[in-house]
Image (cartoon, rainbow, N blue to C red; front, side, top):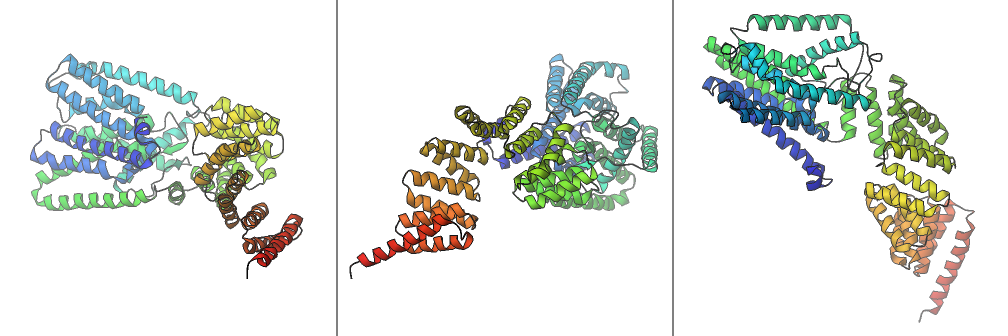
Length: 598
């Protein structure tokens, strides 16, 4: 909210804030690790390695580059601030210091509920590197965390209820528990592999069949590592802390309670991968201390690993430059990614590349025939091409599959409107507004439908509301300009058409209507420029070319006016007004020539 107030619609500023929060977390992580390990020389380099892995690992690109994942970078900062406050409390226990711990933890939970595992992480840190377990009984340390655990339980309940109320929690019948368990085991293994070899990263990973042997192999590997770190907990305590940090912090998002349709997500590794980095960093440091001859080789491997991550992160960032690149990359990196196909279609549709968009929606539906978003997107694209008969079954199916989708109701209403049923269209637009009162598209569509019924004042109110909600919505400005023009309110119409042209300079109808409005108030020269722009964008635009020729004749530029009338008659030979106006323009030119002094 603060970003919006400070920067408006400047996405670059939002990205910089995400980056700043990420950098702060990386620095704080380094300071935390060196503080907890008593800032010995041997601890500085492992701490630096962990902080570098956190700062520049390719798996973390999604959390930082995606503005909507502000919750990741913000929650991580509060997560680490909570640990810092906890260290202060451990060093000098006091009630007010514990209150600061609780406040920081509450801020982390408010940022993202995945941080519910923080009390568990504090217990791990009590074991290593704080080494509180020998000095304090485990029960006492657990009791110490009860207020934090209570906060975590409350946040978990609220999150589950909200997500379920929003339809994000997937029912058990749709994703059976055995499939969820298999996916959870496979995801733990995949995340671990991608830490070392971060390839084929994508913004969305669809659920797919997991061979039983893969799930079994993953389970065996996880169990083996778990047994090993438990056995080594006295000699190498950092292994237990790092491993259980990784396992534990992933529990809320590992898919046993499924939120969303993804099988896994790179952003889920943002905090958990700190645990793997700790295992690797202190394991390498331990090995180097035991075998000094290996120090140079270990340092070289660490540098090479960090350098490779940096290069891969830069490469991965390129796929986030726009939506088309992002979803094309997801298609290339995964198999049968119906969400990526549908979203790529939507991105191309927004760019006006409708012919290119349609095949991607069709491909998404061939993979998942009952995917409401793809039906809705395909219907919208077909409507934009004027293929109403083909669009109708798709938008109808989208409404059936997802009756709470305001967008689907808007597209069904648009279909009804194109069929000339303005009353049924208005009813669908009203349904959409019940679901989403701030839908600029629904307000605009309802305004057009009401205008077709002659309810002008109501229509104007809806169209004004549409441009208020979304000042960058060109269609709303255009339709408002047309209605104001019909009301004879030329100046207001010019304002709206001018805004449409600014937002959509490639819209020939907007240029044409702005030209009509300007001509209506006597601005013939400005009107000529707009008619000319419309003709350049759409050479076969008969009305625009006719008005361009007429305006030129009015300005006594007879030669160009005649040329435009002649070009028009080549396009539309039976257009009688053009033929009559051509004859008149020739006569006026000849008369002007005769009247010139010799």
